[in-house]
Image 1: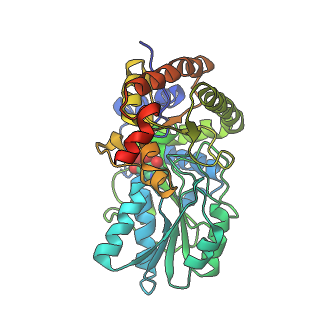
Image 2: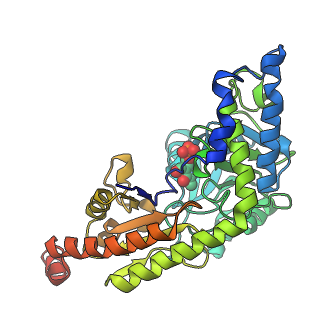
Image 3: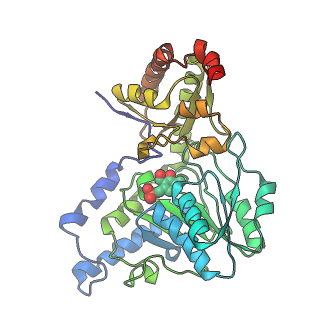
Length: 395
Ligand code: PLP
């Protein structure tokens, strides 16, 4: 059975060019870039080249890139550095729809370290209210952390505008751009953004590699202390294969950005229109304009997301549901709940996320299978359309 992989916001396949490029780094070029001998030391050039390629993708300078283990580490590093360099400021501003890497750190800082976290709400389309943003950022704010694009809905936030507001108050600006980098153009050269998080495995590099952009001149305290790697900004022997992978992946993403974004958006829209036409009581979660080109989050009323996922899995189709069941919990998605999506609809929500490798045939296959799956599940469900109102009244 062929796999139709529409879960690219969870992780992506390694690009063939990336795979080829990193092969020598396991058995031949396996040295330590910090070594005095040339066998290891020469690898520092490969790391430098990868840094240049990644910097080009986001309009940064190479020395503004610090390689690390991924998005989670980048988010924690940025937020902790801001708090450590501005100890007199005790407030954080962030959104209710951030990735757990930011949300859970902020909850910890509030609960155990006494910081005040000012949470920004979203409306039913998943968009921020700029008046609320202005009202919540103040001279007490150490850091504003707002994601560039949401991983569940693909909704894009106006982070450069928010950065201007943060700057007016002398606060630092961080953006988690893990889902945005490689999918939409990013140019940090004139943006007032101090920190940006990115992760290799979301853009066809390998898992366990990422980077934090740190704007030149930003005061910084490392999160991981130890050796002198990464110009004293991130200790630990460099993950050379990962770094090379991220460099090649960044180069590919930059080369294909416009063309592949259009291709993904066309296929995503075909999927969206096809599902809406074939399935009654279905809707799109999140704004459809300010949205990543690869993401479609749809709610199907009167049916369980997990049941849809299981049936899709039997057909070889991979996607995610509105509950964070991928992480082993059936908690409803905090993103959809923050958008005010009713509990019942959250549970029937599915995220389809495409990649530049997604084909028209795959989308057509999904369009031929998913309506049948939903119709079948609704026919079984105690929450099937006919009984739904009655069930709600009983509860
Ligand atoms: N931030 C966002 C928006 C994400 O989607 C993810 C991963 O799903 C992360 C952070 C965490 O990145 P990593 O898996 O590289 O730690």
